[in-house]
Length: 193
Image 1 (cartoon, helix red, strand yellow):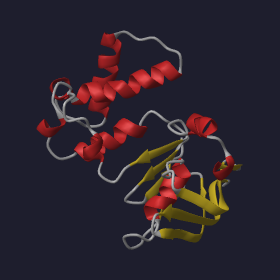
Image 2 (image 1 turned 45 degrees about the vertical axis):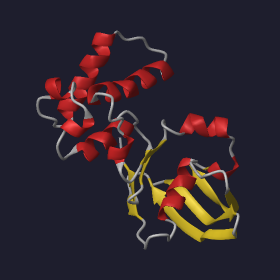
Image 3 (image 1 turned 180 degrees about the vertical axis):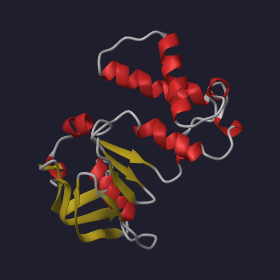
Image 4 (image 1 turned 180 degrees about the horizontal axis):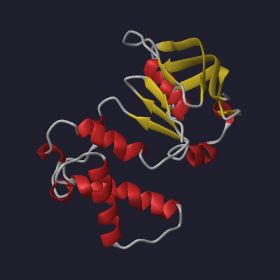
């Protein structure tokens, strides 16, 4: 198997008004395609910072002091934001710790999933009607095992019972094959086609 992600001596600091915070000090690991990998550690040990660095989502006061993040042999610490935007969402996807908080409580669930289809269609330069987007969304909800998808399409997030976290996770990454998926309870998933 070939390496899809390799972290070499990654060191990240944060500049604050109180001084420098040394967040990561020499993180090293390698992931191969199809491998499942977990980073475990106490609160504040750098799990989230490692994920955010891989996804190119570090805050502006973060400094990559040393190291490499090699994704498909490209060092992500050295690419521009514009280049990263071509990777993020297509090849690297991030699922945050509490996906429920990223659902808009004022927008119906079906419409929120539909937005992902619209973004993907725009990116792929495809045109679909409103009816087609709705049909795709309901079909996806059914494939995800959501009972009565036709009805739940019209509900608000607070009206859905348990399982919404899985629902939200699928909203973010079901559409991308061959991609690196990061969750911030820090389990890294690499799926085969």
